[in-house]
Amino acid sequence: MVYTPFNHIQGKNGSRWAKFIRETGADHLLIVAIDAAKFTHKAMLSSFYGDILVRPFDFDASISGLEL
Image (cartoon, rainbow, N blue to C red; front, side, top):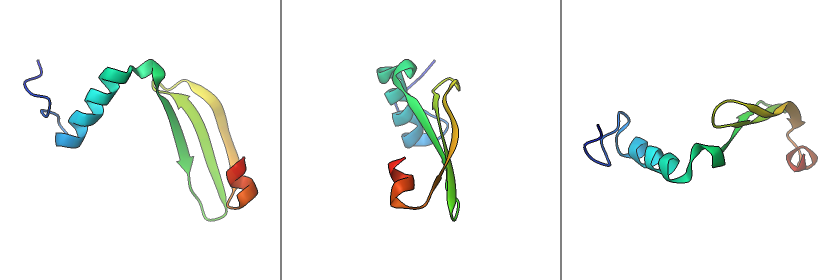
């Protein structure tokens, strides 16, 4: 049972995130994971439930890498 809109384990920010997820629906969210390194970065796209939509790929720290 939820008592107030700001009754979350992570406080006010957690409550806002939980409210956003409930209103938007998890089926409409994508997770973009980026591992930023010094020269070559890695990125991956997944659904909110952890299904990988785009496998991890490398891109470099340049304009062409960011366009990728």
